[in-house]
Length: 77
Image (cartoon, rainbow, N blue to C red; front, side, top):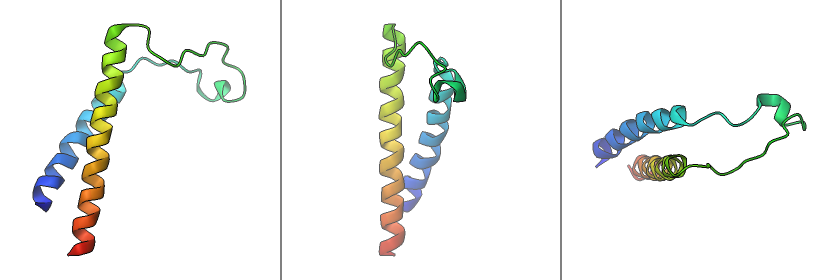
């Protein structure tokens, strides 16, 4: 069981990195934290961006569940 969770964790980590890198940069870096960024579009404008957001959130949820599952299995022994 732990081996399966470890494999899911590794695969989901790689997919999550890939999906995050596919996102288009929207912010202005640190300057937007201090009011330098004028535009504030929080949601994607196209259907492809919205689907990419959904896939990223779904993969992040799988990643989080596998992290918690691995931690529980380590704690139980």
